[in-house]
Amino acid sequence: MYLEIYIDVIFSINFLMDILLLLVVKKILKYPSSRIRLICSAAAGAAGACILAVFPYLYGWIQFLITYVVISYCMIVLAFGKQSGKARLKAILLLYFSVFFLGGVINSLYYNSRLGYYFKELISGNLFGDRNSVWFLAAFLTGIGAIYIFTNTIKKLRSGNLEIYPTDLYYGDKQIHIKGFLDTGNNLYDPVYGKPVIITELSVIETLLTEYQKKKLIHMLNIAEGNLSSLDESIYDSSRTEEKELSIMMIPFRSVGKKNGLLPGFILERVVIWTGDEKTENDRVFTAISRGILSGHREYQAILHKDIL
Image (cartoon, rainbow, N blue to C red):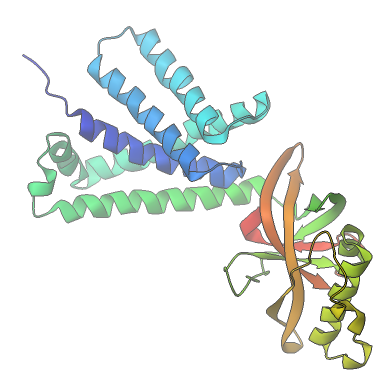
C-alpha cells in the first residue's frame, strides 16, 4: 500500500493559505513588509508543508518543532525582516491564532458543506475536471470573507477606546513629535493616487519647512480660502534655488456647515504612529494643512486616517 502525493497541489494550497495568514498579521500589527517578502515567506511555509508531506512518519516532537517553531519563525522573519524579539513573538502568536481561526472555518465548511468532497477531489487532481468546481471556489471565498471579518474584529479589540496616538512626522532632515487623533470619519483621499490623507495644523507643520516653503504653503492656503488680497508674489521669484521644492496639491473636502472646500497639502517622507512601545510606519503620506486649531483643548495636532493605522 502506498500514498500518492501531489506536491504541486499541496504547495499551491499552503501557499495561498500562508499568503492569507501573513496578510492578516500584517494588517493587524501594521508591520512594514513588501509583496516580495510576503511571497517569499509564503513560499517558505508551503515548502515546509511539502517536506512534512513527503516525510509523514517523523517523530511527533520533531514534526511539532518543524511546524510550530522553525517554519513559523522563518516565515515571520522573511515577511517582516528585522523586528524586536517581543514584536516577532507577537507576530508568531498572531499567526498561530489566525491558523486556528481559519482552520475552524475550513473544518466547519468541510463537514457541513460539500467542501470535504471538493477538497478530496483537489488533492487527487480531479477537481478542475468537475463541473461543480465553482462550489469549491465559493467555499474558498467564504474563508476569505471570514478572515476579513476576523481581521477587523481583532483590530477593533486591539485599539479599544484609544484614539489619540503619539505621532512622528518626517520631512527632509527634520522631525517633529505630535499627538494624532484617529478619526474614523476622515475619508480624505488624494485625488490623483487615491491614497489616504491626514490633516495637520499649520502651526505644527511649518516647523518642518524652510522660510520659503512656509511662504509658499501660506500662499496656497490663502488661495484655497479665497483670500486673494494676501497673496505673496515673492514665491514666484525664479532666481531662488531651494534645496527641496515643496510640491503642493489641493485636496477637495466636505465638512459640517460647509458644502465643500480645498486644503493644500504635500507628501511627508514618513509618518510613525506609536501604540505603546510598538510603532506603525508609513512612507510618503499625504498631509493636508489646516490653518485652524484641530482640538480646542490642544489634545492633538493632527487628524489621522484609519487606513494608515
